[in-house]
Image 1 (tube, helix red, strand yellow):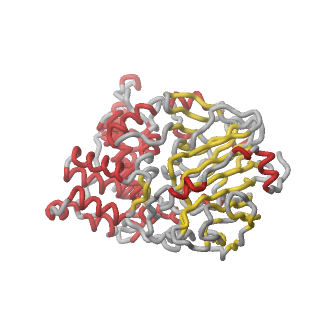
Image 2 (cartoon, rainbow, N blue to C red):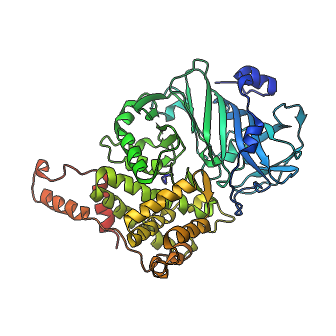
Image 3 (cartoon, rainbow, N blue to C red):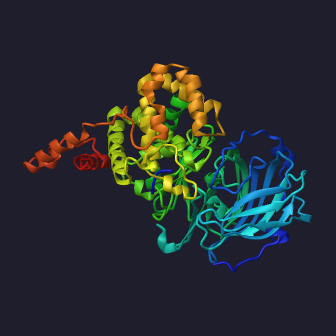
Length: 534
């Protein structure tokens, strides 16, 4: 992540099957139940799930999009491994209306269930009574019109001004507001979905997508790679598609789709550069959807379908580093995921480092350094604002009792980046690159804790070298507030060049004579940031 009418229908099984035509969607519960999965057992204070007892492995969604009432209604079928023979399955929900729960896909036996006490930010646990041999639960439910993950836009809020729009934002713990699930980054699942929309709209998800509209508004999706719940994503609206390469393209409203395709023309080059650094792209396609302006972030790394803000459509491709960031998440975050939100730096710090390596490979070291220098100033300002002694300036955070969105600051992004950059400078880029490539390969589609990464770093890179260990100051970087004594910032000569040309312009030099041919948005930003850094 980069920090920025139908009448109401009530559904039972027969209505869902007849209306959506879902009878053909069937899955082998035994297949999913027997697939092995490594699950982090580190305590997640932001989830009611007890995945160490019974862990969800696969999700099937059958949903109808109701714009007039701002609801999603339908069925979620959760396949799980009951690893301990427990008689209860614990799920996360928030503001969901649970209508009925059935044991297994035959839907013959209703399950007893209960909703626990509501907790701020976390919602309520959904506790389903199961049998030791139960392989799946089938949950009939609907969302609340004010569900935190669902953004319902009126036509006037879109670029085309003709049709409404829906998009989701599940990170960090908002998937539970539109799907009952184990909303924990330490739990990974595959999923299938069938979504019914009003006619004339296209639905897309973080999965395999259709690129053309279905006249009946019926869309099917499949995500074969296991993902954590925060990467569940859905968008519905007046959307068109443009191909960029054989494996990437862009979705957007008709008014902006061609502009977006031009802006993101280098996406395939970014994928190739990323693969040369840290191994193959494992998600099939890499597509981008440009959302309406109300999207609250710069970008969101939903696998196979990055969500981005239209503000990156600058017309000069100067803001496409955002795509490099979200693409890098296809390795750091989506492929190897932080086990809890206390260690979000394992996602974001790695991604910032990877993003800058992609930018350097495509656009040169000078440009990558300029970007790093600009964000370096943001890091210094963040630490000054919160206080260098604040525990929120550690890489490993204690977010118990807090919204994990509190962790979305420059600390995990930029302090994390500088930590990894420090290691690179200490061991050499080639050695560091081989280490990272091996890391992504070994832990692909698994979760990682801070302790686990540091142990891997010790075993595979430091290997008992006390001199190197002392030089890196790992404890100070990860578990101590502020910046360690071996911290080194990034400096760029771009501000000096900008100042020189500014002085020439103020002295009467014609704009056409100024040396600004390769400038973009960031030249002005970095000059301003540097001049105010003290």
